[in-house]
Image 1 (cartoon, rainbow, N blue to C red):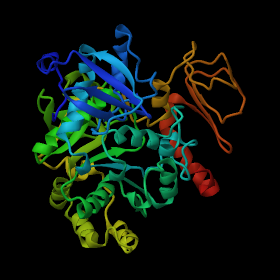
Image 2: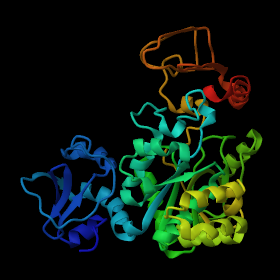
Image 3: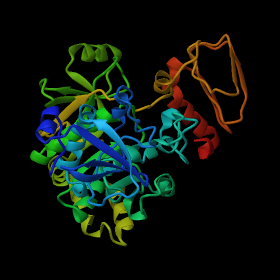
Image 4: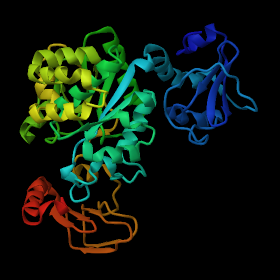
Length: 460
């Protein structure tokens, strides 16, 4: 049987009136006489919302998280069985079918862009350890770790590439110990997203020329991963059948001036992109949101390796010439020297401006899955749980009086008493204290420049 049923009708046609979930040695299995046994490394988390009605143990109770399924012929021994009514089981098979049958996981790669410095989160984010390696959201995991785990449900660990600054190579391997050194592509200097993506694409062409790439930033937050997987699978299906450059748009919840926008051409699930717009002023952002045609640009892309290389050759010919010239050296002992030469000569430019705004085969799949780039202290404030005075602060060691609508970040073990602030950012580190009105956080870059001018790089 090559697929899992996704409707009650299909299940009844197959004679399914129950499904057993088997827990054995840390794995879960789907077990049914007409299907055999399929090993399931992680159960679909959304399934848990239905479990209490049917006296079924939830995935979290079983110590499992969300994710797709893979198949195995091996039969578990000493199995522990949980029986689910098929009407409940069908809820997550829709997700399973897309992942297991439509995409060849061996031909799917994930490229994580992790070279940024995260200056807007200064002084917590530093050149020595930028935002993607921090647990700013207090989840117990760094951003890059959450990003890897999110896509590890879709992509084998050996099919990940991380493109980062050479100085962060060891940090990447520390946070992602599943990867080997060859999976970390080191930029000698940051040149924006187009050279970053070119490096990964031309590298992949040498080892998997027919591959599909998912390209993602390393430091975004996604709260509804079940819906996110559905959207990613839609994009994968589309690029499988079309020569398309896909991006993912976010349904805007407010007129945000800190994001770029994508205008789609129609109301289809997957729509051709009409235009990209850089960060607008507030008045224009309000028009965008009211129109219903504009969506936030997530910076997440899906395309086939050959399609993005063709687009680079057409729209960024100078970049194509540089990377094409060193392509035979990628993956060899001469790669580092060759890439140093390329990055010294290539122009810094974003993939949006260099390719996506010019190509005529750009499509967008829009949705709402609890996305945020968590790009500023202000966005972290919006996302975080607040106390009764609308403050975001540590649970321990922070005492506030006559203080409202402020965000406070302290080192562990530090005690702070704050009196009389309203709408402020307070960030304390071992060597820097920042106190700034929330409405003026755009000045953080100016503060960094002044500190650097007076004290050098030691506080940057």
